[in-house]
Length: 285
Image 1: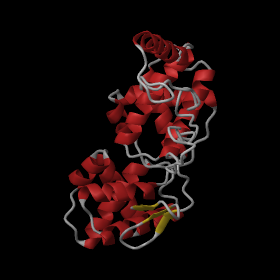
Image 2: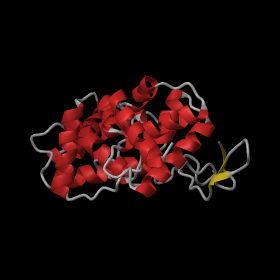
Image 3: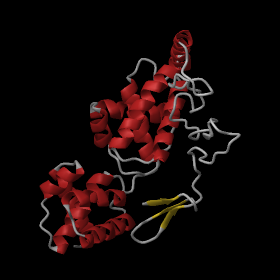
Image 4: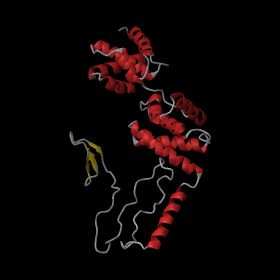
């Protein structure tokens, strides 16, 4: 991707497709003149974000030990400024809720990076966690489990295919503990989750087993027919997607075993065999 600072566009260097346009420049103003010499022309900084304990609105005393004219500070003044920096950092997390969110949102960023999730999911997860904190659901519970449950809830709400096992692995917690925290959020906060679409899991499983494009398309067609016939109702979306991919690989002549697809999808071979039989019977394959 190439960023054109003149037009404010993010462009693909291969095909020329404009991915983003009218991008705001958050960097400093690089123009200078004699009357503004020595003046910091920095902009206001990054936009506000609820994935920060202070919404990104707090001020920070810089680390440079120089005055406004650029001259070094004296020894006594440097000591006073260091003391001010210390109290500035302490005052930003004076409340217990701020300290809680400070720890939680650092972990949230780490989990989101490991799962390759966009900024929108991070913001959504932070919103869910803030609401849970306001209702007192975090008190007496693990911060790691609750922020991981909020992240999983954000993925489910946005229909991004990330399983409980995926989130529990990056958070280094037990899957059952994560599921319990997730159910608590759903029950206490009355969140309505959309029904997962099995087709969204096909691409991830197919990439792990290195299935061809023809097999992927045929798996999507099988899932579409299964949805029309009502076969997909009440079934685990990941297991159903894995079974459809196995059926498609068999029809396409690709050598993909049930074990390979089961390991890639994170389900058992028994699940694939049962769904495989149901799909063959319902679709007449």
